[in-house]
Figure: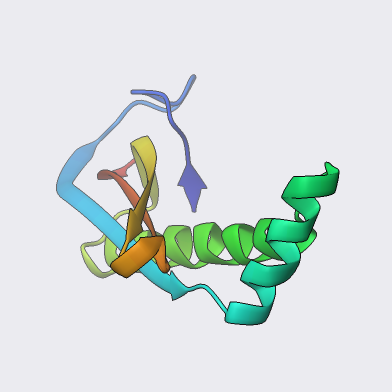
Amino acid sequence: MIVTTTAMIEGQPVRQYHGIVTGEVIVGANIFRDLFASITDIVGGRSGKYENVLARARGEALEEMKAEAAKLGGNAVIGVDLDYEVLGQNGSMLMVSASGTAVTV
């Protein structure tokens, strides 16, 4: 399935619009990950643990969105937008959402 942030796919006209599709994933932050991320923040550098969790959540949200598009009969999703929100007490959870328009090209 083609997934793009653009409003069209070059050389492939939209034949049918199926509607807006979404995928949301909420992941909790582990206390040990938080501790090590704090240490990384103090001494500098990147937090590999958080990057891995973020990448996994983004991938799952996109897969959920594509599955919804396929259920509607689409073979592509255009105009995709990814959003990230911190939720819960003290920002203990992260929500990744993907949305776009399911189409047939």
